[in-house]
Amino acid sequence: MQFLRKAALTAAASLLGITLFSFGLTWSLYQVFSTPHQLKTSITSSGLYDSAIAAILKQQSKTAEPGGASSDVPVNRPEVQKIIEQAFPPQLLQSQTEQVIDATYTWLSGDAASLQFSLDFSQAKANLANGLQQYAKQRLSSLPACPANTIPYEGVDVFNATCVPPGADINAIAAKAHDDIMNGDFLKDPTLNASTLKTSDGKPLQEQLREAPGIYRAVTWSVYGGAVLALLLAAAMVFLSVTRRVGVRRVAISSITVGALSAVLGWLSSFAVHQLAHKFTDSQTSNTSLQPQISNLVQSLADDLRNWWVIFGLTCVVLGIAALIALHVTKPKNAIDLRTQGKPHPKSDAPDLIPSDDSKPAMATRHEHVVAPPTENKQPKPRPPAQG
Image (cartoon, rainbow, N blue to C red; front, side, top):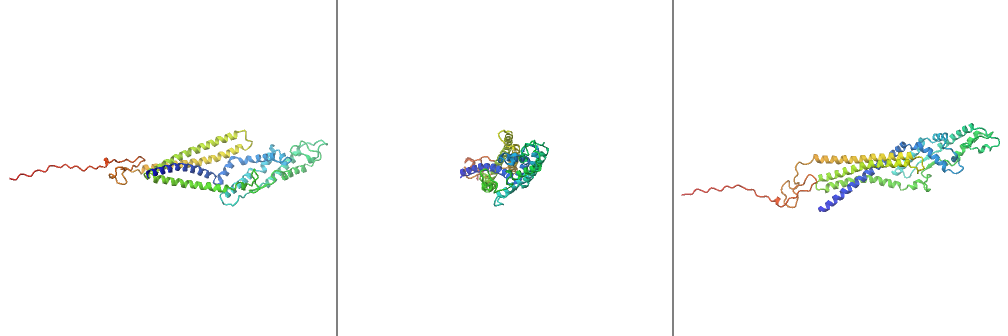
C-alpha cells in the first residue's frame, strides 16, 4: 500500500509540473489572441497600414494583365504616390481590416454561423481614377507640342508622353485615363466578401477555414481544463503525502520551480523572436517591401506574450513563497505522535513521531518501547523486639 501511495505521489508531482507549465503557456497565448483587441492594436502600432497601401498597389501593377491601365501607372513617381495615398488612406485599410478581424472572431467564438464581412473599395477606386485624371490633365498641359507628323492624340500615353500632338483634346485624353482605371484590371471587383475572397488554390476563404471554429473552441476549453487539472493534481499531492503540511510544501516548491522557469523562458522567447525579426528585416532574400512592418508586428505580439507569461510565472513564485511562509508561521513547536499523543507506540515497527518537516519519521525499536518498572528504595523492616 505504501508503494502504491508513493508511486501515485510521484506521478502527481510530475504531472503537476508539466500541467502548470503547459497551462502558463496556453493561458498567455489565450490572453493575447482570445480577443481581437490586442491583434488590432499591434497591427496599428506596427505601421503596417501606413506602408501597405503603396505596396499593394505596386504589386497589383506588376500582376495586372498586359495592356491593363494599372500596369502603366507609374507608382514610383512622387506625384502618383501622393494620389494613391489620398485615394487609399491608412484609415480606410484599417477600417476594412478590422472589420475582417471582428467578423472572424465572431465566427470563431460561435456567435455567427458563418464568416460574414464585406469590403467595399468602390469609392477608393473612384478617388484614384479622379486623382489620376487631374494628374494627367496637369501633366499634358505642361508638355510642349509635338511635330505635325506625330500619331493622333488617342494614342498618347498620358504618363510617359514627352509631347502633345497639335490639336489634341487634353480633357478627353485625361478622361480616357480615368475610364481606363475604372474599367481596367485594377480592383476589377471592388467589393469583396468571405465567398468571393479566395485563397491561392481557388477555394473560398470560409471553406478553407471551415475547421477553425472547432479548433478555436478546443483551444479555449484546454485553457480552462489545464487550470482544473492543475488544481486536482495539487490536491492529490497534498492528500497523498505523509502529512498535509508535507503535501503543501511539495506543491509550493513545484509552483516556485515552474513559475521561475516560465518567467525565464518568457523573457528568452521574446529575446529570440526579436533576434529573428531583425534577421528577417535585414535579409535580402525576401522581396516584400513590408519587412520592417511585419517584423514590428511579430515583435509586438511576442512582447505581449512575454508579459503575460512572466506575470504567470511570477504569480506562481509568489504563491509558492507565500505557502512556505504560512507553513513556517504555523509550524508546531513540538512534534508529537498524532496517534498516541506522545505515548510509546505498542508496535515496535511503527513511527513514534510524525515530524513537521519532510524528513523520514523516526522509527522506534523494540528496546525503546520497553518500559522499565519504577524502582523503589525499600528499607528493611525493623525486627520486633524480643519478648521475654
